[in-house]
Length: 404
Image (cartoon, rainbow, N blue to C red; front, side, top):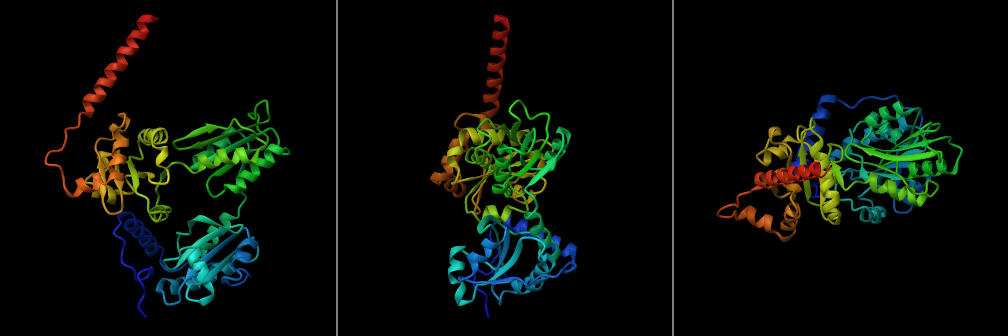
């Protein structure tokens, strides 16, 4: 039987540098790891067979449910089946989580396929307390990896530490974290913090010191920290709505880092990338790009994905632009059909320059110019512009010194 175009096992490769590189990465990893790792299978059941009738009840009965949407004729689904069953047995009954599966060729699963827009097999979706999560499972397809992933998802959402040095160590291991310092933990404020941590555990890490001398006069201080951003919470610490809204905005940033783990998820959103490739040894351009986007392009949320990428890891798309690590930082649009280079990264600081680049994407000018290059490209006077800016700043500083 031939597999339709939506099937992952025989589908045409996407003409997309990101997906190609991501899949190559996982293929190399799988080859390096060799055969499926054997794990000790604790007593437990098989994956739960789900259909239109029992699905909602099952995914609501557990903290976490991973659901495998599969088709029996798909080769990759056939390969995953024994691995998935082994992972279910290994998971056992000791955690409030289960593995489920949906036969996408069965007549009683049609509404599930439509509800979750299943268009490739296998698809491994995750549900927490009955709600589908935005990320899918894209990790290693081994029993041990799947089991470990589920166990990690049901762990306590908070990292409990003692002292500011322990907080600093925890932050070094975290991409984004909300930090709570409490004088003691038997308070309404602390209970609200716990509820917010549970609600946003898939978006941020939550680090807490339950007896902190730095809790302040109110007995609680809360702040946020990431590689490029930080902030202090000044709202009502006993209000779940206020605290969760503040944390959600910071934990779901406008500018996101692309990795091998989330790359396919980001590309499948279908939004063009405005992507900045950076040198991992020089992070200041990441902060500059983030601040410019937040201050001037926030209205483009939902129409563009603002992305940062480690240029040493994602060298393939960078090479497609005719650039290498020595050229970093590099900024470009990636529409998954073409890549359009933004000339001279420093120009992001010029008023209106980046905004015009975005408007040219929306209007189709970038696409037109890609296929019909102008007879003579305009000379870019960015060096002269920044030289004038520096001279202007120097004159202002001199005037201030004279006035003093």
